Length: 362
Image (cartoon, rainbow, N blue to C red; front, side, top):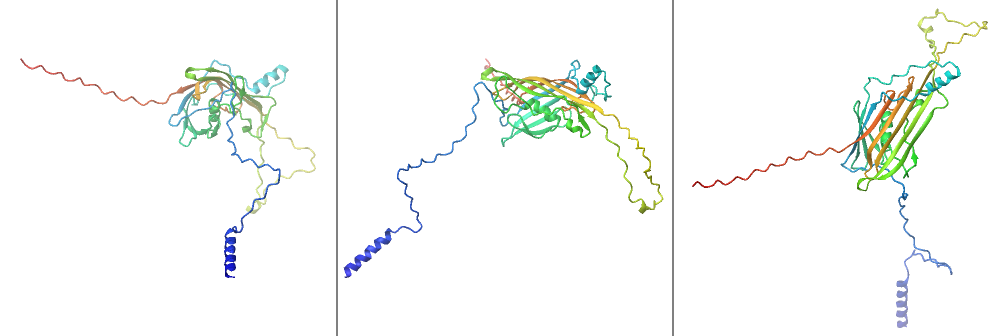
């Protein structure tokens, strides 16, 4: 009896040791005929889009502590023809038809003695945080700072004329381009909306913004030279109406100030004659035409200009403002790369001749 009881206790002890911990989940058996799932693979890293064999990617390539600098010179060409503004074209068309053209405001003279920038220094820097910084310093005025992307798009800073000029000489295409393909620049050379609600824009005008990759040719030391042509025209015309005169407001406190006896004009309701309308001054015909043509050679591997030359022409009629901060006229533009300043060479130590031995006296 004692032997059977001790055997039962041993069996119960082994059974308790084999019991699994509470809460453990049993796997669900796979139904017959089902295939085992394939092991999950890590998500592939998206590869950079492949550049076509006959295309190039144009980017500014900067290195820390190695700024890229170039100078933009603008020279007035007094012998070049100024592009005709839209109101002038409309006046000629009316003259041919025999219609009387509206009086136009006198256009500004092509050459003025006002101090305007004719030279800009551009310094492109890659800072320690990897951000691209731009410093624009004109020869007349105050310098401005901006940030830009690797394709030369102005991200922050520079407004108005300074931004337009920087866009012309910095902005590159967003996508790879082949010879013969075109793209447009983010310029705003004419701003008719800035004239306000009294300006009525005439139909027509012109807006043509095209930059073309002409060719890609081999250069020195394995370099590639991309030749780029610029053809941009922005033109508008219209009429600027004079503001209507406003009537003075009545003084509500006149009675409270002891002016009860002030004469007040009362309209005659029996008079059927309508009042004569106030004479409205005629509107002013105005407009602007800005034209940019040019050609540049961009070094693909070095990521900077080798040369850039162009023509900027502005014609104004009326109180329109130039969008490139230049008086009306035609200007020849040229970019000249400026190398990094070299450290002065250390002065070489002059060698002192060795003293010659004095022969002993006889």
